[in-house]
Image 1 (cartoon, rainbow, N blue to C red):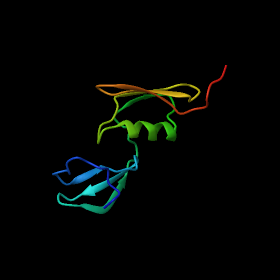
Image 2: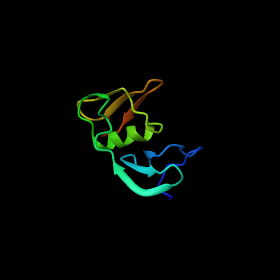
Image 3: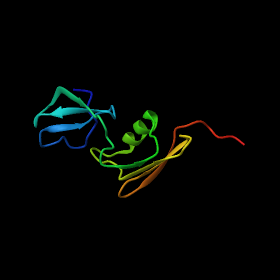
Length: 102
């Protein structure tokens, strides 16, 4: 299948794995990719999220995740102009809102 994320090594155990679409998983049966997919209902279930996270910000954060990794903390600005994302080994500030001018 062409809809799975490029990986240096294919998974060895069967299960759902991330795809190029950050909200979708594809099933690896242990030997090959199948047509079976699953949507991520709430990718932040185990993450402390403060503020209202937009779909655009959520997609941007998922693109920063390595495999099944998820950040442990997400803080959004009240105006939605920026999001702070903390992983165990790195942090990002993601700008997804309106541009600020002076």
